[in-house]
Amino acid sequence: MQVFHGLVGLKTHCKLSLLVRRDPDGVTRSYAHIGTGNYNATTARIYTDLSLFTANPEVTRSVHDVFSFLTAYAENPSYEPLLVAPLDLAEKIIALIDREADHARQGLPARIVAKMKRAARQERRAGLIRASQAGVEID
Image 1: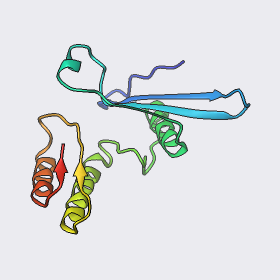
Image 2 (image 1 turned 30 degrees about the vertical axis):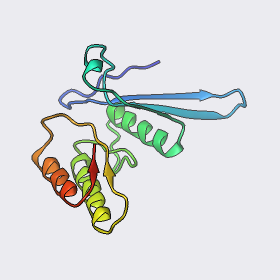
Image 3 (image 1 turned 30 degrees about the horizontal axis):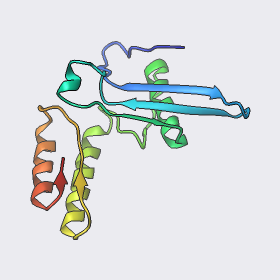
Image 4 (image 1 turned 120 degrees about the vertical axis):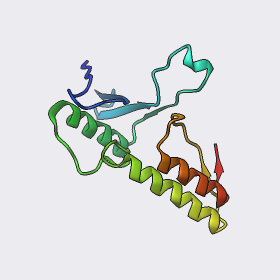
């Protein structure tokens, strides 16, 4: 087991785990856990942390790439399907919000379920307001 705490000078705030193991059938598989919070018993009374546990190869490869960056400075141009700050998180969130607004304007189902700090950046707040005005259901 290896635990990494991030790079000096780079604020690292992610909850990622990567498990690589040889399964009983002899095949090596990767499993990733992605979480939104620190599973704090006190804050659990205020909001819910979310988790994804997956063996999806695209996701596990991206988690591996993030760990490669954090441990060996092996930066990639993209970590899709993950969004990684400060590389692409802000611009892609705005693009996703705008996409939902376009869906609502076209009469397609449109909904945003998001967990973010109260102090979310102004451009995200403005995007959510525009999306809501376009008819997007927002939770």
